[in-house]
Image 1 (cartoon, rainbow, N blue to C red):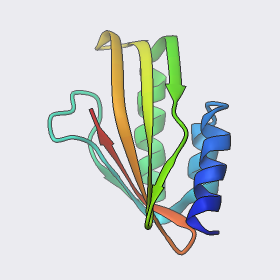
Image 2: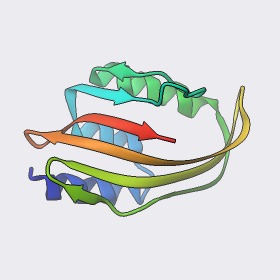
Image 3: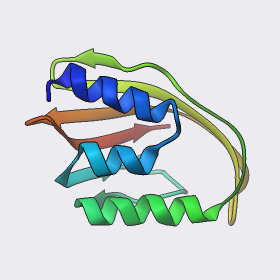
Image 4: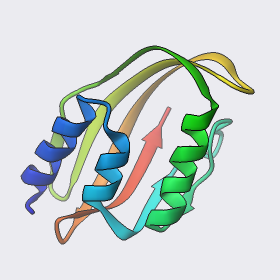
Length: 118
């Protein structure tokens, strides 16, 4: 897939909140997931299974979703970014609102890295 096709499919799934489907369909086996150094929520992970576990562990902490939205992708070279807002109540954190930029790198039609800025 081209970067435009990956970004379009990502957007289609993200607008439906189908994040695990994004991982299943679009992530490379050796994908990296990179959090800010100061993140109180999650740590970095590498490899499709480890990235899935990271996401699953976080989702299991969510007790209530008060709001969530994702902007349309912006594409540049072999990257695309989206803005993401979540307003949730999570075990160990209480109610938190996270506004972030999510940056994705594409190689050979697959997402090879995701990086979060918040």
